[in-house]
Image: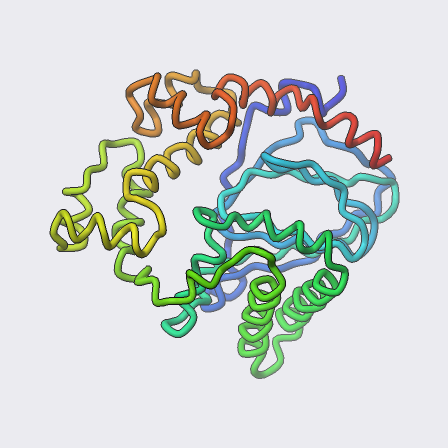
Length: 313
């Protein structure tokens, strides 16, 4: 059976735990290679995700990759970024030898007090990182510069020469600066102190209690702020209301659960803390332009994947 259309290939998503090569740099970077003649989606072709942002670089061969929004084939010199907790899956696309660099990093750990105002520019909430892939596709110079920086990070991590931590940190910041200054979106409104560190305990609380009822009062207790001040402060810092933020996080978790295929839509709704099914459908459609059922069917059937595969071949 064609592994792309086999329902058995869509029954599990692996939540991958990334073990950092250097805990102080919060990253893992390594080369993957395959010289086998075999290629094409494996059976099963599993989804996986992780909280770290992931950059992919192809050195040799072709890499097929599918995300929630897109399917593409990467060629030598190509660069792709995947946002935090974004489900994806890859495979060797041709019989040629495949060499790629996988670079996983907790980006928020590389922002200090002076650069914190730019954290939102790389937030899945306000500016999904996958949109930067259009930049890599449309600007050869930027793609080449990003490729070189990621290769520099890889080489420094392998050599471990004195000061390699400084070299890696500098290359990471240069990579972020490259993306920021060449993107067409307007980030100027975010170039002020965001106060993200002040609301971080509230964001952590939300992540840990998504399956439960989360109230403004809970947040006020966590941050020791008054009700009205918290409402205004949270929206100023995050650029979105508290309620919309919680709903966004719930729907993102629901998407991951729907990919597993193990829970009914009602069970998924309850698992993410939305007990009203009508409300769940309304919120899900607002974020995905389709119902949970349509989302699940689309990810299982991959009706748009076959033509893309044919074109790539």
